[in-house]
Image 1 (tube, one colour):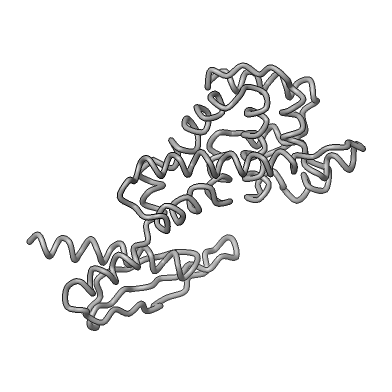
Image 2 (cartoon, helix red, strand yellow):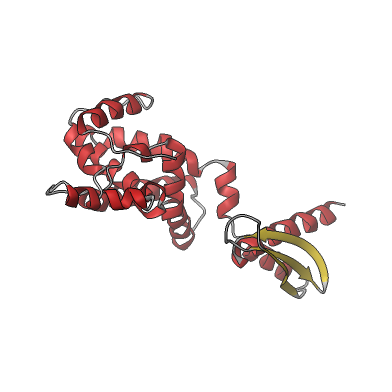
Length: 244
């Protein structure tokens, strides 16, 4: 992805078009310029503001709205379970993935150094931008419009089957399944480390064994990721055996 800062005028103009798909009309462009200004850009252009204050406010607004959503959606979950779910919905990687999906990164204003190091691809910056934009919307259009935007973006994204599958704790589910039956011995074993031809990330292959019998296998760029996939596959096999 090539990246170039937009002029403030073009930025506001293109943002108006961007928000039309959500039936939102921007009233005061200055909120959004502030919400998209990284400190590196502010330093280079002698600006007195960055997105950090709005990011702080947006974080609080998101916490409230996602808490309300989860509280109503899961009436049988306790406060600990809801807190755990909320942390996964509003965590940095989730918000960054959403911003990429929305193609919102194109509007960030970055300094030359940050552009050189591809700041427009960094999870931390992308997550901050979503939160600061939430605050800008809140100040510009009010609570109701902001709530609808969060629903149409983050809540819709977090409610997708792919996301729900990603945040499930299959290792815990597998352990609980075994404890509820006959408490058989569960062990995860690393069987291979694969170095792809391109890149420097190691791909790990891990198996889940129950009483020494292989029930599931998973691959991932971390042990945790590979173990979760192995646990998921083991659960699927156990469920299939139970039905048969």
